Image (cartoon, rainbow, N blue to C red; front, side, top):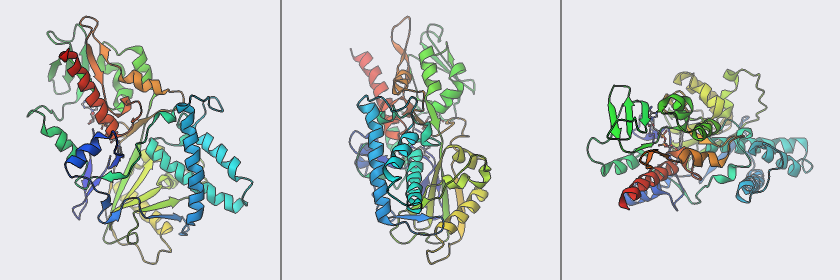
Length: 432
Ligand SMILES: Cc1cc2nc3c(=O)[nH]c(=O)nc-3n(C[C@H](O)[C@H](O)[C@H](O)COP(=O)(O)OP(=O)(O)OC[C@H]3O[C@@H](n4cnc5c(N)ncnc54)[C@H](O)[C@@H]3O)c2cc1C
């Protein structure tokens, strides 16, 4: 599980990757955090998700009643999207996407009911919601996401907690029971050979860039889907089964990035936890990316009174990785000036900016997986299937990590559960 955090100047940790514990029931991360007293429902007194501010880029607050109306329709449509997979209903169109379905149905419901201006505002709110969904899904836009498969993802209901000492504290608990020196850092794996020529007397040989060779009877591979997509063809010897390679190819690794902005003073009003940006996004692809990437930021969360975290996904998130932190900071200030221009006070001084770069990290090559059009939920199961030795008939290569959990893919709890499941598979093998 990748954990990256940045220590902001006032001593608070800002996570560049996972920071929410999504749900309680069946969530092993929640259980570890609870047992070790790590949970919180607040960020420095701001109750998470409690008070949210919806603003337009002209600095106008959006009427709460309209937000609730769109949210209700949107929630119903997303539940309908999930029904296609969960109830085995054929999608209205071949290769239908979540984005197309939601937009079509939304206009059918709303188009005749409102004037052009009223409809425009509702469309902006819908787009804001879809941008948020892109962040959760990890895609560039919801047109990429297979309508027939989206219901395979399961969100565990409950409050979403955070861990003030950081997700690293979970890793510390997990590492506690491991024997000393059992974790090797900075060992880049260049080849995993398995089968009869693996390296007697063991079945698998893991070769590292630094020349070290590690022999084992079984290996649980938790390399990210992004890395597998680029390297699986030459990483394994012999090559992985065709079906597994095809599934790796079909599944998508999306990019979600964060920008952490630290100011000299408070930015959002007391108690407000999140600023939701309701853009008027009539984006055309021929507008230069430098003029539009920032319109993908759909919200800023206040993780402290003077620290904001912005989220964005897809091509714009990848573009942000090409900019310096200073350039990103300058643009974020322009955005905040627009959305907060009627807020009564001027912005405090920006002191520090940090951005994540999950796409250009050569060992993640993206953030988390989703099921795009053309792929199936079964691709996740195919990826998760162990490779069995022809001679010993035992599983030699086992696969774990977020992209191998059939319903909790993309999450840290999915990653941990699959690791535990594959470890249990080996325990069972030797207990009978
Ligand atoms: C911005 C962002 C926000 C997120 N927010 C949340 C959240 O709030 N809640 C949540 O539950 N989840 C969240 N996630 C998702 C969560 O972080 C992932 O699902 C989880 O980290 C996946 O763990 P993993 O072990 O499967 O893969 P990874 O974390 O990608 O770990 C794979 C590891 O393999 C290593 N590796 C790859 N190639 C090699 C090689 N050749 N040799 C050696 N090592 C290699 C990598 O360096 C990496 O350490 C977020 C992710 C991102 C990017």
